[in-house]
Amino acid sequence: MPKVTQKQRVLDAMRNHSTKSISPWYAIQHLGNTRLAASIYLLKKDGHVISSVTETGTNRFGDSITYARYFLIQEAK
Figure 1 (cartoon, rainbow, N blue to C red):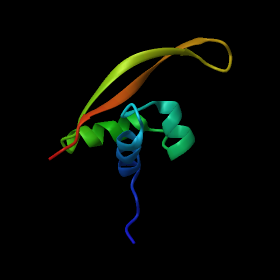
Figure 2: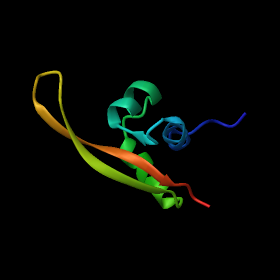
Figure 3: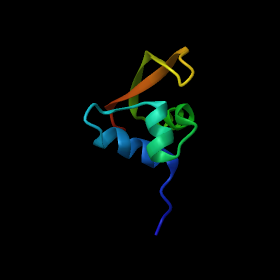
């Protein structure tokens, strides 16, 4: 049985999520992926069309933070 890669887990999560998107916090909590941007880079390199938006939030210390949310626009052919 072939090993499922982080890249494949991220792609599957974006496919199955209702908004077709993924955030770094989701990737850490549900996928064990602490390098989401690297996985997105590899998916784009494979031909997937992925866009991002910058969102703001608050961390556990009450500080304002920004992070990227990635959206699957079109899968590679």
